[in-house]
Length: 246
Image (cartoon, rainbow, N blue to C red; front, side, top):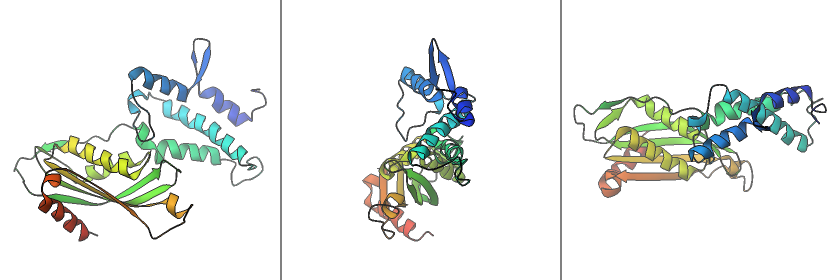
């Protein structure tokens, strides 16, 4: 069986395997075992960096390369003689593991919180923050903008950190509603703000590239936490400021 594999697939298959007793495990099986032993979820938009070890991502790229080569084979694409797709499986594997879905495998960006020393007690809004994500249902692109409003409390964080945190959460397969909640949860945790408001507006490839193939419809989701939920005037001020931003 192994001898019949193409050389590159043979190499990556062997390289990606681990020994556990008399059983040979792939790196994905090893990671799942670690997660289950730790009692951690590994849904599509969960981060699993806590169980990742040095070298694991390279092994995962190798394994995904093999799996995606099987997909190409099942689509009846001649990757041996077609120069356009000879390296496609590995390109896609690297893209998924190190770029498009990197938010699953990399730890949270380092964020330094500073005391709100001057006791600033008014709303501030940052945006638009570019959102590049992937729909978990069809693995199509989700692209749009995010706006974040903060009514500060104990801490403030650097402006660029909002962008980094949004990118970290967005680079996973997800759905927009859950991404919006995750952004609000993380900003609340990092800032300990009295209120957090999040608005995400995005176009979905599963609408534009398939199905109805509609290019004029976007989706908007919003989350109001703390004083934004309790104070209609503050909520209205957030949306008014967003409407005047680029």
